[in-house]
Length: 109
Image (tube, rainbow, N blue to C red; front, top):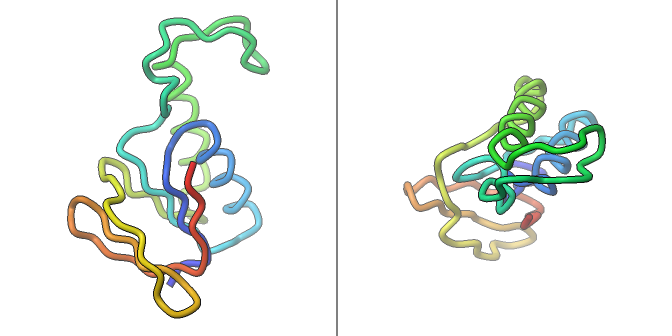
């Protein structure tokens, strides 16, 4: 059982994943692909630390940063959450590929 399952690989999900990994919280991040909606942006301005970058560049940066913590966070890339169901004091998450996981907390990003 995970303490936290993060749904989404955009900036919010990856940020949450990095902080959870650094705090050694047993975490799983599920995302179809990294970048979120920003993936489709041809130009992103005012992203802290950069003048301008593309959505694809941002997605790559997000994935690389999260995977720096691969020993402290599990990542299911290429799958989508299909269902979140309450189970006791926690939740059961089912993905489109049929994977199921139990967690105490769900963060939708």
